[in-house]
Length: 495
Image 1 (spheres, rainbow, N blue to C red):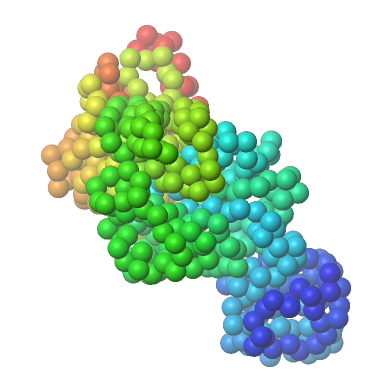
Image 2: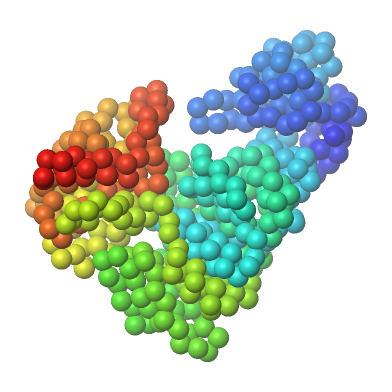
């Protein structure tokens, strides 16, 4: 592809030095992947600054570099001239990456109906619900999210909730080639703030809720809200949780048509006769003037909200009630209120709850209908928002009958420091607790003290099958396998 075509859609105020009438190989933002005739786009990341690797990219064969206007490259001017490197300066290299990637992959987003879901909680479950309803409706549908990226018979483990823009465009191109018609996509606040979805037009944007999370990145709730709102600047239609405290403000900011769902306020779509049990929910609602009863095997009031959002979206695409009921009957979301079969008289549930609000939601949902004790095992991630740790400790101490404080993904923080932060919160309550650093030992302890009808909630890891330790060392840690292994050993010892 000629470079001049690749950069046609960039902002008009771009500054170009050198020829654009050259064939390029591919686009890269990772200098280690550069080959001859590639374009290198210098992106400033969390750990590395691409501007520090411009010379490396040139040495490896980059024929064009794209940098931001404030970047000083005077120290390598001679090399640039000697190798006839084309330099393009733009206001934002992240936006340039998104725009050029779309052109490179032949604008796949324009050939798909894309549904974007943003919010602190509920993105993954809502995405699964929408995907399953559309599939049950006979619509070829792909999904991009926290757990897997899937389409047809392809299933790729996700490395982040929303891929970097070039990876996203490649994935969308693969979905177009596989004849997908719809794509359901979790859109994180990071993806919106960092322009990973820049230039993509969403057929529908969904807002589930907003609560404290990622403040280590956004700094405050105002910035967090503004990031979420960016989704709707490029949406044709918006589906909003009308009960969320931020809904009134968000609705005023949204330029497209809006429909609302909820349980407490005046909304367009709601549910009645809600029954929340320990392992499922049931409710009634009017669809096409018919009163329908809906049953979903995921507990919690939040499940009703997620289901309402899914129904609202799929109704826009003329999904029929038979498809909705079939999808809800079979929907399963890895690591979300997931029951692990142990053959024991107690229950073990895995849930991704890793924020104060999500931990409170799952503990409240289970506690309300538990026949015996609720035992909570959880930790908090290292090098992340520290303010939530005591908050989560206080929530566990208040709602759980017994809490085991342990590790999550400690990363480069000392585990004991993280656990002590959590302990500060639990000490404010009368809750019983124990600190066990090794997460496997913590799970084993919880299972050994469990009585008949107790419910053990393993919170925080959810779908993850690993732990991240110092120096980003990733070790295998699948809680499903660990729980079953402990149960088998208990069986051998007649425990």
